[in-house]
Amino acid sequence: MTTESIDVTDELARRLASIPGLEVREDEPLSRHTSFGIGGPADLLAIPHTPDALRDAIAVVRRLGVEPLYLGNGTNIIVRDGGVRGLVVRMAGGLSEIVTDGPAVIVEAGASLAAVCFQAAQRGLSGLEFGAGIPGTLGGALIMNAGAYGGEIGNVTTWVEVITPDGDLERLPRDEMDFDYRRSTLRDSGLAVLRACLHLAEGDPAQIHCTLCDIISLRCAKQPVCSPSAGSVFKRPDGDYAGRLLEESGAKGMRVGRAAVSTKHANFVVNLGGATASDVIRLIESARELVVERFGIVLEAEVCFVGEDAR
Ligand SMILES: Cc1cc2nc3c(=O)[nH]c(=O)nc-3n(C[C@H](O)[C@H](O)[C@H](O)COP(=O)(O)OP(=O)(O)OC[C@H]3O[C@@H](n4cnc5c(N)ncnc54)[C@H](O)[C@@H]3O)c2cc1C
Image (tube, rainbow, N blue to C red; front, side, top):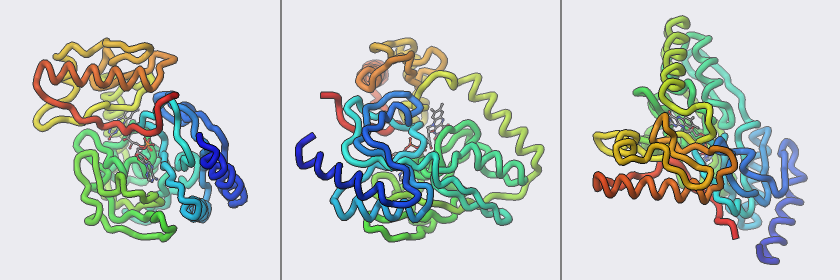
């Protein structure tokens, strides 16, 4: 870090510490906040517990010219070993209100998608069953347009409220977000997702619970759910499956350091304990190369890469 960036970080820490409802930690290892258990430190990590705290934090970073990194539950992200300079705003652990009003469910960005699925099921609301077992937050799900088993979060979203880098609250209707396979215009927009309204359908609670349980059983049978990972590494290429291409290319079981391609599902890289981001990234590149050599297909990463390499 340069002397100038240390000064900005110190000033940022001082100003953030005075915001009510904002938990602030300095030099926080991001390995504690990713499902991979990997990642260097954030200079500052803030967890907003109220919408006002989030808005005030955004106003402070704007005045100091810092661009924050938003983190949900860190389940689709690889943080490099050098960590993240400046501020990481973690939404999981705060802002997790879920309010149901008939078939509409209004959910704050830090709420776990699993909690929303089960709450909806209890109220006999159908449409979110696909999300059972996706370990992220609602905010992360909207950014990634998370989906599985034929469902996607974008299909049940009515509107999303965001905070712009200028600190303004805006409500975006579904049409403006161009939800598509694992993407939406929210991604890389610099907007902080604050809350969203989901529109579900009335259904039979017992049947919905049954579907949730079936989906969770399927996941446990097919995916290495008990090993630290960031879910599917690559997106599905047109007309095929990344897992099939990787398996037929011989990627299963490949290792770099303490990172391995899962022997249960070739599209998952798992941390065997003590893996670094550099191990994981080198392994992902090697696996991608195998598929290029065997099939001539360049797989596109689904996971997000953030932060800087270790010095
Ligand atoms: C075992 C396992 C299984 C998985 N299965 C699936 C699956 O079936 N389908 C699927 O789609 N995904 C799956 N995933 C991946 C992941 O859980 C989803 O993509 C999830 O939606 C990510 O949510 P998150 O809160 O963890 O986001 P993060 O990983 O924390 O962040 C993802 C992106 O969203 C941004 N972001 C997060 N929250 C906000 C916010 N409030 N405002 C602005 N930006 C934000 C981050 O900057 C980052 O770019 C799986 C992961 C694991 C570990």
